Image (cartoon, rainbow, N blue to C red; front, side, top):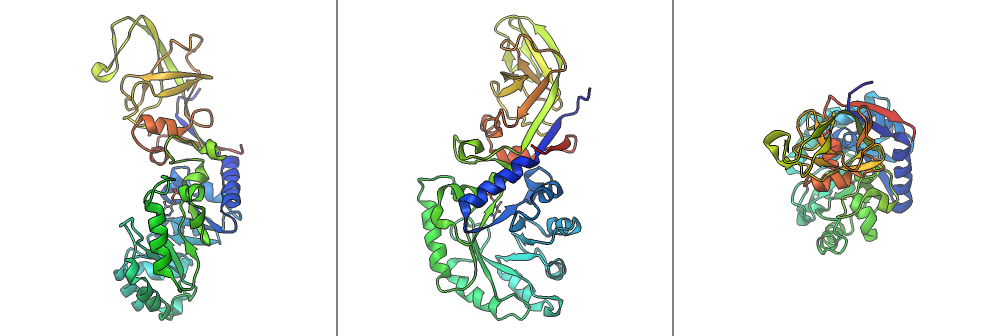
Amino acid sequence: MSRTTVATVHLGALRHNLARIKQLAAPAKVMAVVKADAYGHGLERVARALDGEADAFAVAALGDGLRLRAAGHRQRIVVLSGPDRASDIAEMQRLNLDAAIHHEEQLHWLKEASPSRGLLRVWLKVDSGMHRLGFAPEAVSFVHAQLASMPGIDPDIGLLTHFAESEVFDGTETPAQIARFTEATQGLRGPRSLSNSAAVLGWASARGDWVRTGGLLYGLSVVDGKVGADFGFRPAMTLSTRLIAINRIGKGERIGYNGTWTCPEDMPVGVAAVGYGDGYPRSAVAGTPVLVGDRRVPLIGRVSMDLITLDLREAPDAKVGDRVMLWGPELPVEIIAAQAGTISYDLTCGMTRRVLFVEDED
Ligand SMILES: *Cc1c(COP(=O)(O)O)cnc(C)c1O
C-alpha cells in the first residue's frame, strides 16, 4: 500500500463544469482559464479533457501557451498579461497566441514588431477599477486607434476588463466597473470580455461576447459561504492519503509541535500521511474537517510537513491503512480554505511535486 498523497483529477467533472458554464454564459463564448498549471490540476491534462469543447484557452504567461501548442492544441489561446518583453511578440506570432495589451510599453514593442510574421490578435485591457493591469478608461479610444493603425495587428481588436469583487453579488463596485468599461469602449468595434467565474454567476449584464472562467471549471466557488456544488458544479480534484497510525493518548497530553491542542480525555489520535509539504495548508486550524472513511473528524494540533493529527473519538472503527480524504466531492475544498484563512484556488494551486497525480473519468 502506497503512503503517497494522491490528487485525483476528475475529467468528467471538468467536462460537466465546462458544459454548465456554457449553458450559463450562452450566447457568450468561453475562455477556459488554465493558468497556474490549470489551478494546480495540470495544464496538459485539463486541456486534453476540454479539447474541442472550450472556445479558447486563457493562460497567464507565454510559456503556458507554448506548452499548449507543444501538446498539439490548435484553438485560440489568450495570454492574459500579454508580452512581458519585446522578443515575446515574435514568439506569440509564431505560436499564434492572442496577446492582452495593457501597457504603453507593449505598444512600443508592437510598433517595432515585424508584420511579416503574421497578424497578431490582441485584446485591449481596460482598467475599470481593479488597478492592476490595463489602460485608464480615458486612454482607451486613443490606444484602440493606435492598435488599429498597426499593420501587424488583426483589426478585430478585443476589449477586456477584470473585476475586483464580482463575488459580492450585492456590491456596488462591479456595477461601477461595468459602467466605466461600457463608457470607455463606447463606439469601438470588437468583442467584449468582462466576466470571470463569479461574474458568470452573479452579473448577467456583464456577459459580453466572451467569459473567462477559471474557478468554476474546477468546480470552485469564491462566493462567501458557498461551494461549487451550490451552483451545480462538481469539484475536479480529490486529495487523499492514508491513516498511518492510531495512538491512544492520555487526558491532558498535548499533541504535535508546540502542543497547541490538549486531549480532554484518554482518546484515539489518528496520524495521516499528508502535510504542508504536500500543499495541505499549515494555517488550517484545529477543528478543520477531514474525512476518515465516511466520517468527518476534526484536525487537531499543528499541521506539520508530512503529517496531520486527527481526533478519532467519532470514528471508533478507524484502522491503520484507512483512506483519508482532505478534500473532494464529499468535503468541499472551499470549507478547508475557509478554515485556513484563504480561498480554494490557493489550495488547489498549492499542490507540491511530492503529490502523485492520477486521473479518473468520473
Ligand atoms: C484568473 C483570471 C480569470 C479567471 O478568474 P476565475 O475567478 O478563476 O474565473 C479571468 N480573467 C483574468 C484576467 C484572470 O487573471
